[in-house]
Every structure is written in C-alpha cells, then in structure tokens.
Amino acid sequence: MSAPTRPAEEQAIRRDLAAAYRLMARDGMDDGISTHISARLPGERFLLNAFGLRFEEVTADSLVTVDAEGEVLDDPTGLGINPAGFTIHSAIHAARPDVGCVLHAHTVAGVAVSCLEEGLLPLNQWAMQFHQRIGYHDYEGIALDLDERRRLVAHLGSHNAMIMRQHGLLTCGNSVGDAFLRMRDLERSCQTQLAAQATGQPLRHASLELCDHVANQYDKWNDSDYGLELAWRAELRRLGIEAPAQPHRAQEATGSTVA
Ligand SMILES: [Zn+2]
Image (cartoon, rainbow, N blue to C red):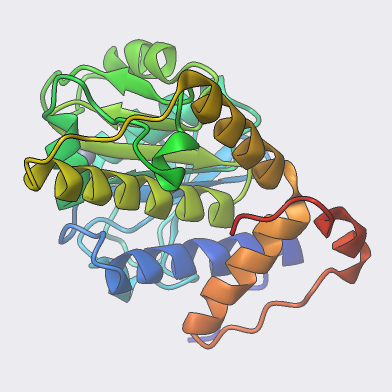
C-alpha cells in the first residue's frame, strides 16, 4: 500500500517523530508499549503513537492523528491511542502553543529520581541546565482522569521539563529534536546523580551563581535553531536519515555551543 500524500511540513514532522521513537528505543529509554511522544500539526491536531506498537516499530506512516478533544482523525493501523497519553499530551498542547513536541518517558533513572524527595540536583553540567527550569507534578495514579490536565499544565508552567513524581519524566520542545535532546540530557542528569549519590561520598555542590550562569548558557544554546538543528541531524544520521541542511542559519552558530 502506498503512503498517502501529505504536505511536506507534515512529512518532516512525521519523519522526526518516528525517529524520536526509534532513538528512544535504541537508547534504552522506552518502556514496552507504554509512554508516548506527540508532535503538533497545523490545525489543532497532534500525532501520537499507535497503542500497542513498541517504540522501535513506530514509523512515520503508522502515527495516529487526533484532535484536541481526543477524536481520532486518522489511524492507519486501527490500534487507536493510549488514553493516558491523550490526557497528558492534549493538556500541554492546548496550554502551550509554543510547544511543538511533548515527550513522556519511564526511564529507570528518571523514575528513581522522581522517587527522591529532593528531586533533581544541579550537580553537573547536564543537570545545571534544569536549574529553576523544571516542574514537579505529584502522582495521581495512571493518568486517565482528564481533570488532571489542569494540574499537569500548572506544574509544568513555562518550563520545558518536568519530573512526574513516582512516575517518570516529561520534556517539551519547539521541535521533536529539541524535546528528544532535552530528554536525553535529563535522563543523563538523573543517571549521574544516582551514580554520584551511590558512592556515599560527600557531593560537591555548585554555587547558585554558577547554576544560573550555566542554565542561561543552555537557554542561549537552545534558542539557537542552528545548534539544535546540527545536533538533531546528527541523531537522525544514527538511523541512516540524511535530513537536508539549512545553511542560511549558519551565522547563528557563533557563541552558542555546548561542549
Ligand atoms: Zn507514564
């Protein structure tokens, strides 16, 4: 069966979203058929994974299109979507028009840190980017109650990352690549914190001034479409996808790198 003809913009979003699912699986950040990544489409619609597929099975043409009320508009596999996924993603897409992608994950380190009363600590470069830039959402059970959407949105606020206590992690981004790269940094922040705490040795804490400085540096990097584009295209190449470059943005590179 040939793939339906879609606008180029939607094709690119589908390519990136399917790639994010497969990269999550490749990096061990998936959880069977649970969790979800969504991407906004024009016209108050968003794409989610078909419920029942493992992340490495998700393709650009198997993604399900739903509207803001949860009505399925296009479901190529007939599998539908995870209802808890709709609760979480519809809330954020409705409240945050600046967000193009929402990524929710149950990684082991992320869930472990979500169980710690103090949450994520700004112990290292990865983690400092989230200093005063991460929300916390209390666990309410599996997210089937649409009323929880109000609290999810309130707890996320204007941040692009959130720890869902006793549950997992959530990141947002302007684009799919932005959300994916932020999730990987957040998961590495959690892994590193647990590894450092597991030594039992005294932890070296950075000053608030240094945390502010590094977080601002990351903000600058993340505001640079060019930097994100370079990083995301490098990730796509892990899957054998050569995305076209956008050389007109090259001048933005100066002064916006993460080393
Ligand atoms: Zn979940």
